[in-house]
Structures are given as C-alpha cells and as structure tokens.
Image (cartoon, rainbow, N blue to C red; front, side):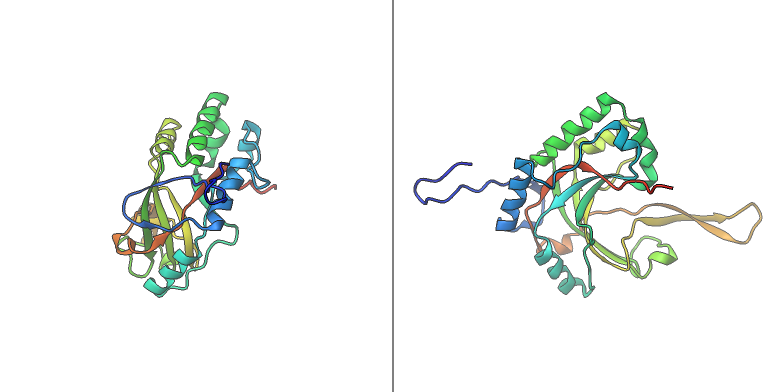
Length: 241
C-alpha cells in the first residue's frame, strides 16, 4: 500500500463499480477494510471451488460486502416497510437452486473460465450498478402468487455481461443479477405467467411461474449506495440425506 509523504496517511484502495444513476457514498473505513480483506486474501476467503465441491452445491454465489445499513434505513423511510437484511449476509446469486443440476456438468475449462470472470468482478471490472429496485407483493404490476402478496423486497440491480454470457454458454436463461438488501416476510422470486388446469378437464387450476424481473427503479436514485466489494465463488451446500 502506498504512503502519502505529505500527510503521513496511508493511501486508501477501493474497488470501483460503474454506476448509471444512483449516487455512491463516500468510502468509509468499513469499505476500505472490506477491500483490504479481499485483496489480501483474508480469513473470510471462500473455499476453493472444485468440480467435486460443485456437485454438492445447490447454489453458486458471490459474497458482497459493504456498509448497507444507511441505504436500508433510507429505504425503510421511503417505503414505510420494515425491511430486514438476511442474517447470513449479502450475496449475488449466479446460479440458483432450481438450476443447480448444471453445476455438476461444468468441466475444468468451464470452471477456469468462471474463475477468471470472478477475478475480474473482484477487481470491480465489468460490473454496472444500475440502482435500487423494490417489489411490494400487494401492489406489484406483476401477477403474484398468493404466498408472495404480503411480501416486500428491496435490492440493488446489477448488470454483469460476462456472467450473463457464461450463463448462456452453459444453457441457462438470462438473469437479473441483484443483491437483496432486505425484505418483509421473505424474498420474492417468482411471478405467475398463466394458470392452467391441474389435469385436462379439471376446474382446479395451478400457477405457471417464471422469475420476476429485478430491475432498478428511478424513484430511488436519490438514495446513496455504499461502495461494494465482491468476494470469491461459493454457495449453499446440499443438505445431506
């Protein structure tokens, strides 16, 4: 780390992200420490991602660090919702639980490519922070499942072209990358696209669902976002039967 001879203070290092609308907060001591942890390979470093480990994972995620509390507090005031963060921290989902079967099919070359993309993301390269999004299940323009109508969720929408291209390469559909900031009653993942009979001729209907869009809402552009740092690849492990 460089030292400024005029001030006698260490020069702070940050990992930049490209923003397209929202305001980014000044770098805080917490932000600086998060960057130091990543660059120095701190104890929180994700376990080595191997093909064997992938077969036992049900999600593939990137850990996200930052001082999100001021942003979440501002959202609570703005929306009136008592949004609560996840107890296990913040992350970006690359491959979700319904797509987990693809993890066991990744060969060494594909895994190496994914690791290279992650290294770029850790340097803050190729990541566009689009802004904050918010879904209220009671008033969403999308058709909601009954279980989601009492839920509310807030998130930061991201655009990561290299990860999007990777998903396409392994046969997965386009994904709205995001970091969930907080929610009420649980996160919202799906929308109802249509209803069909549970079986031919039956009056009983079932929902056909698809991922609900997770996009930035310009109403929240005035809310300051923290500087975010991106960790290694890891995820939730399958439960042993």
